Every structure is written in C-alpha cells, then in structure tokens.
Image (cartoon, rainbow, N blue to C red; front, side, top):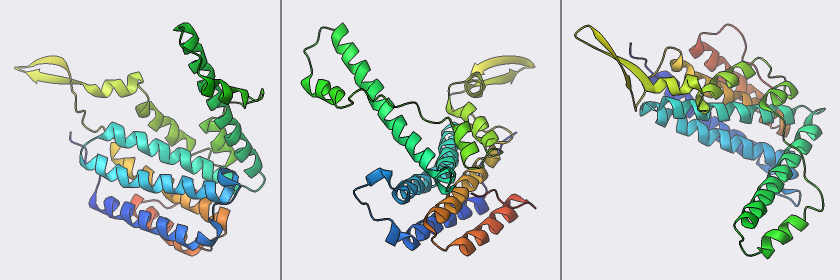
Length: 257
C-alpha cells in the first residue's frame, strides 16, 4: 500500500504557519535586540529557537515531496525539541533553571571536546597546540554539566504528553532497529518471497502524520514564544490553532505553552 506523505492542504497550512511565524517575530521585534547578554537573553534565545523551527518547517515539505520520510521525521523531532525548550523558557518559574542548564550544557560540551582533542594530540605525539591549551585554561576548573534530557525539558514546559511523539520520532532519527528495518522489503516473484534491501524506503502507515506533527510542534513553539515576548499575538495564534485542529479532525484544543 502506497502512503501519501503530504496532502495539499497540509502543505499550504505549513507555509501559512511559517509566514505567521515570521509575522510573530516582527511583532516582537522591539524586544529582540541583541544586547551584551547575547544568548543569555531569554528574548533572543526564544527568537533563535523559533527561527530554527521555521526553517525546519520549510524543509519538511520539501523532503516529503521527495519521498525522504526518514529525513523528514528526523527534522520533525528537532521541531519538537525546539518547542520543549521554548515552553520551558516561557514558564516564569522555570525560566532561570532552563537557561542555566542550557549554559551549563554548552560549557560541558566545549570542555569535553577540548579534553578529547588534547587526548588525541597526546596519543599521536602531536606538537602542543598552545591555542587549545589556552582555551582549556580559561575553563578555570568549570566543566559544566550535561543539559536536560528532552523528557526533562518536556516536563519543565508542561509538554509531557507531547514527549510521546518525540520518542516515536527519535526511533527514526537514530539508527535503531526500527529505523533500519525501513530499508528492508519483501519481493514476491512466482509465488516465492525474497527479502531484499530498499535504498529508498517508502512511507509506512502512520507516516502521513509527519507533516501534521511538524506543524503542531511549530505552532506550539509560536504560542510559547508569544508568551515569552508578550507580543500580543494570542488571537492570531488561536485562529491558527483552530485551523490546525480542523485540518487534523480534532475536537480538543492544541497543547500550547
């Protein structure tokens, strides 16, 4: 059975959602000035996360039109994770913790990469890289800590139920047995069944919801961003939410931050 990966209505809604996302950025523009705080400013982090989601949403329909279902689902997973971060930052009593852990995670990653680079150079008797050594000195014993897991983020932003979608899309984003099995197929010739490889795996039952879940993640991200900036776009987003629910055949409100 051939699965239609993306209907015309969903393709049009995804593009409409993107354009409204840029309108939201424009509405919040006075608050999106990059200051000395840089990435420590929740307004700026919110904007960069939303920009990332909007470009992701541009890529998803392109990939689906080409039949690249695994790649599309990998990007939808990213959209969900962006929404988790935005929702956590949108929670006033969780914002500082989310930002602190984001900063700690960046420090932890840089430290890990630096240590590994130093180790490799030592193992290969390479010359001392003074720039790298100086960069490591600047850490001054600060190693940071690994960032929150997606499940922890989902809890911070009250997105616990949506985490189930994230977990499902993660199965395709990583080389799990589930995702690798997509590249296996069966061929029947003269009543005999042959197992073979399929370098261009077709869609499976359920894959038709990929674009829907991508739109859901980005719309949820927009709701959270609007809360962070107090941009006054709730009415516009509610209309988009109603349109989403109508397309999806839902009678329940969209989960929003």
